[in-house]
Image (tube, rainbow, N blue to C red; front, side, top):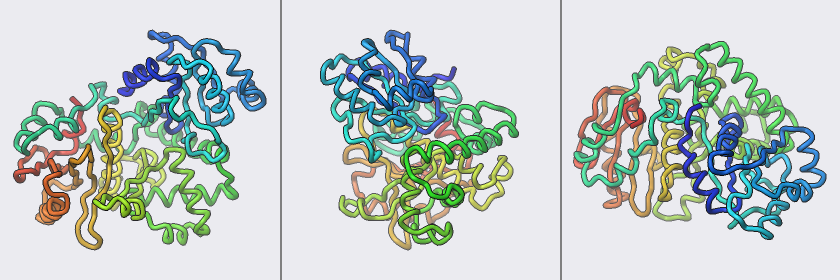
Length: 419
């Protein structure tokens, strides 16, 4: 059993909220985690809507199903019976004891159109991702983001990272990027078994999960769109180009992309602008949430193939986006992840915003850092000013380097290698 870093947050929420909702893509380990929580100071009965009998009860008489459980209860795959949310809401309004319900869902149940009542104000919501590198290595949650925000200078940050971080070999990291961090393919050592797992996952996802939340007229079209979207991970999404390449009507494509986001296969990072209204209207960047799925869909099945592929940089950037998302999800202080770019000139891959301050991250898969990167950092400094705490260049080298007064270069395997 690999310990999930989100566990303390879930336990704390169960002591303060009547309901806790754990969401995330299918097969990231939600069921395993919630069943492990039961019996460790908090006991609950377990229901899964993957069971036909339980699902029928939830669909036909959700109020009776909820009323039949006086103690705490775990309900797995809640999105399969959306009306259960209404019954749970009524039960909580009668009795607001903390820890009454622990719910899981592999679709974003808060945004599903057929759910008219939500648990707003009654429920703590957490998202479970595939393993982080630190979880896979059975290390403690990373303190790096917090440390960088607290550092006064780049020199101080570099010294802190030297003490905090342990390195992962580049070869091992590339293997892990290809296998991804869904528990089963990540932990298997047999490439053939991993390939068959992804084949099964893709088939089940399209033929079952997608159909449960959205009417999809032609599954083959959806499958083609999924593959073409994977080839664009790490890019600013152009819906018109993607609609043309898939042969789908524009409105249909937007609907299908929304399904990918609702089921946690992809995520969007908005561009950062000081003007808030611009953030809402400008085009975001598309990232797949797991590089194993990205590589599988784009026929990359080994570290050698990845290293030789023209999309190497985009895949590594996708992995960094995923790892940064996992890191900030564990922070108690709210943080937001953005991209930053000036049309036709400068671009910084990631901005982490905490309060009014920022950390900048630029990914470079090469071992050398060109002058163009430094010019981009200068442009960012002019735009954000004193609120930019530090810029970190994540690169393919082997040593932490001090670049300037507020810029350091850190090898990717070291930065994400755990503490």
